[in-house]
Length: 70
Image (cartoon, rainbow, N blue to C red; front, side, top):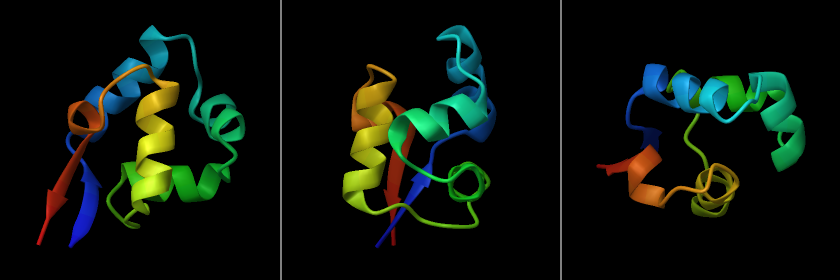
């Protein structure tokens, strides 16, 4: 099973609305900027722990940001 961002554009909008750049948010969550960008663009699938860390940092539920696919 894979974890993917539901909608990359919505995630980017959420970051902006919360006052984060992708660079700042990735640093805040302890991820490399490159890895975070790959998650957003569906090039990498985050681990459940990383996906939870991202959604928690945004103050959202896991299912608000991510989908679990086969």
